[in-house]
Length: 409
Image 1 (cartoon, rainbow, N blue to C red):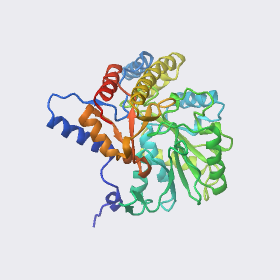
Image 2 (image 1 turned 135 degrees about the horizontal axis):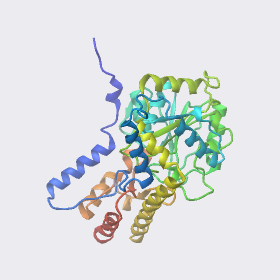
Image 3 (image 1 turned 30 degrees about the vertical axis):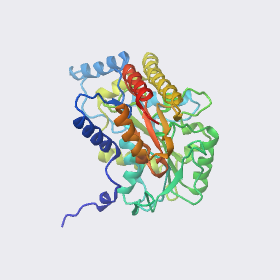
Image 4 (image 1 turned 45 degrees about the vertical axis):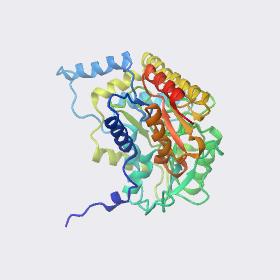
């Protein structure tokens, strides 16, 4: 008899972003002719860099000639691209070998899939608030236990509070856990971990034979040279951390799809000696994945050239100027704003103790601006909204001006 995976039924409500879209659609239907100004989902909006376009075209042209046509590629990724990614880590002073780099179709799938190489009995610790994929994929895998509606959390997860008081970066867990999810620069809060903060987690993981799943998808937005862009800048991290990154935001590949995961040979856990986790992830990819698009990988190679990086940085700077406009505009009317300095997200405290969804509806109805309720990222996201700097400049300016003019605090 076929039965379903009932862990899906344990997922709290619906996925956050479709809920936002549903409310925005309902508002538009009830208010025809009103223009919605979107500062919600972190989706890139600006054209791909000319160097990247040239790389993608090269990939297409190669498929048009018998001499350069390629079918299936290596499941681990094009060797040239793996070496180019490893070289980027070397620039940071971090050691990563090309056979530790696994190219994929994006960071989000990898974040969801990597937990499959670990036991269903693993105890998971997540930053709170956190990007929903960390929690939801582990719930589906059976690690979450039951959802407590009153507390807004799962009873088997260990939640690491990220609050205004601790600068939105948590302390290490007080108890022993097995998998620790860290995102820096953080989505949704925009906070960036320091080397000292990451070193505490590396020490904790090594002591407890735990593994850190480090999401660095927004690392290229870090301007401060003192802040780490990779956990492998921290001594000892190769023994306990898997890092996941992406071309989505750094090069605008949100719809193009390309990312990578680094599994160092030294990375171990309680029953996996050096090399085992790397081999398991390789086995997983070879079983479930036929490799990223060969066309897209040519675009990724182009993005990592000197010209490509210069052009991609110009787009990143464009988004960060958007962040400045939002931060200064919201602050000017008395809203308390965090983030948006080394990350493209701003974390805004709701006024007068309003709930997240309540303030979402106020901004929607009064200013016609769509944001993301912080409560959708976890219990400690309540009382905040996330604002995204991804958008066309004129739309960003229009949204900020509408908030300044129409929001009644």
